[in-house]
Image 1: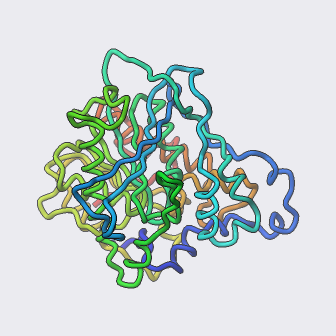
Image 2: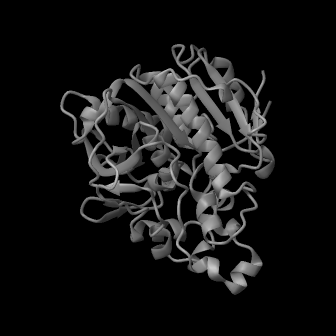
Image 3: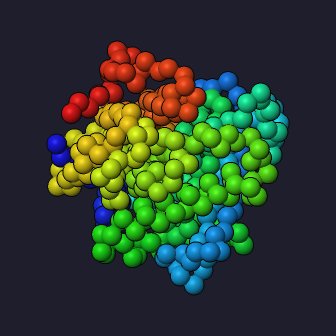
Length: 390
């Protein structure tokens, strides 16, 4: 079986496949309306816990940046964690310069909204919130975003996992997004795009991210942790998940790092293939979007190969009506702006519900031993979710 390619190979395809310009309808564009004045809001988390958020900057002084070799490799993390209710202050979605960079590289959405409005999207996490102390430490899930996308686009998923009892680290990889703020108020753009789009060497991104994610584990679970609340983490229970090439980074990291117990690929081509010998019997979830929503000239045999090589618990799900950007907050941002999204017919609320539900169920099962019947086969409650059968 051949599938539509999910990671974008040229800058033009990036704009075509993930551009929120597709969110606009002519009527909305012409007339605006009350919806354009309301505040965009992410869906509320489904778990029992309030959510705290920290920001963490990491620098790997043993490794040069693959895109700017005059600098050490640097990462920005948003750390989400179960928190004491009503402590801290509301966390922002994006900084305005980051939102401006995102809109500049995403078609015509900037003609219908503003960086300030996108940046002001309401989240459900709070900065400086007190951590919730529990009898047991919390499993860790690390999230890696799609190529050119900032970590903020996985906020809805991160908040939901934290509300369910996980510590979540969402990672920005330097020079791999349209624009991410680093210390010194430096907005780092996509230097990687300039190097890999002309050559198609997307494996350079997934290979480099595998090293990034192992370094993240070193710094937040090692003997001298960089995060002030690292003591919340149960380092014996670690999962990785990512969107697009971030999903490929999850499998690439697992192939090299035995500390990772389970992984999820959300609609990402395996530019770095799963090794022939598999992932050591560890569980892996593959969730793909609806291939009929993307151009048919991008064929991707990597999922069939990965499926054959995975040698542990595995599932391959396809979500009807969910396009490539639908695994992020994009449909929610579109709905909140009052625009339709032809590439992702599912509503933002339904898209988030499906992604959160199945990713959460997977990590509940694999990291916490909580049974989840929804992973056993099709459910009448989720008719959009199709189980792949070999």
